[in-house]
Image 1 (spheres, rainbow, N blue to C red):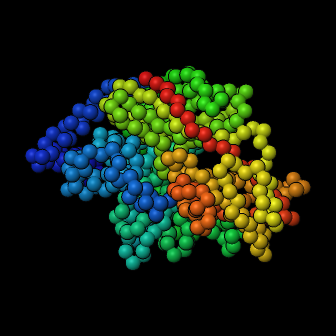
Image 2 (tube, rainbow, N blue to C red):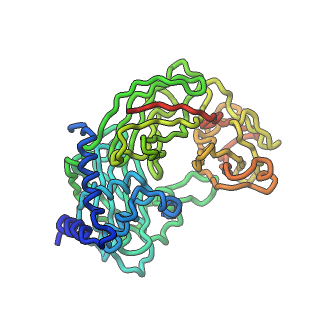
Image 3 (cartoon, rainbow, N blue to C red):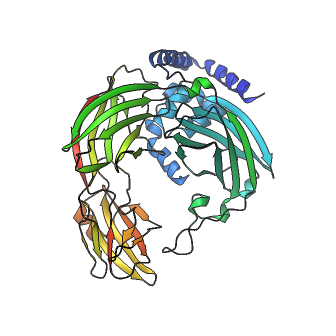
Length: 461
């Protein structure tokens, strides 16, 4: 039985539900048909993921009857689990927005199967399994897509045990998802690497530039994937052109692109603004009180092509919701002032000038290879995102520029005194080495300078 036939059989099994679940699938299909009429088409890391699943499993957009109905259908149940971190993908599964693939290949005792894809005009989610001798232990998989122009996403995946459903997610930022592409999976054993993916191999020391070393792959398997044009054409565009003010800065909300897998908001900044927009605390809400938050585990924002700030923001999708109206709420922003001086660090004295608002220099540490800087940084209201303070590297007093190759970040506090000074919950600590610095003074160009609260409400439709 091929995968397409199996998929139809599994859907038929869902209709043979206990009395308590009678009508669940029919209601989901009715919502699907209604959603497709309402929207006009255009016409054309593993441990962190597990923690994300634990935190959001109760919030996913899967109904209880649907989850129960899937309980006796192994593949659909695993697919529902694999997308539990994403309300958008959970809604897609609930509304049968899934294309079965069912391609398998075997090399050196490892069998890879491309099970399903969830795809629309701008995003591709591939779900695959690996079957292998459990004695090999957990396996890593690097992958390559061709063509992949204009796409961004994760670098690979980790399989804890044979048969586990693993996801590959790619966002096509500027280009559309092609009608077909080739996917190569390159599988290697965990003991070759202590890091989360091959290209993130850690070199010998904290001060060294990381060096990528190609693993000794156990198997390399290439699949040709073709996508149903019905799925790759899905999406709707709202032309908005609404101008608003945020903390004294002027922006125009140009458009909203609504796809089954996500939503994109694009705005442009007034060239006379005195600060670049580096981040937004925002969400969407419909008339039923459903909220659509910032995207997780993928692209969250991309840069303004005409400036240094952010111009496009990714959120969960209302594509399958029953709401007819949608409102944007902006609760806060992160700014980088255009005329602000660089941070000046006197490493020998352990002092800093022109730090971003709320950031504290905890201490500096001299080692044989150079200096290590420790800072405490605010998360922002309602956020758990850690943003590197000095992602652009650093300069010495002569103006020479150096890269920062490695960062260490963690939620929590450096010590009890720091915790007492800054309060609870909304802080993280960061450390990074200043490799190659001559002297005891360094300059940093911070990724932001300040964060502000806001209360901006913009009706989208």
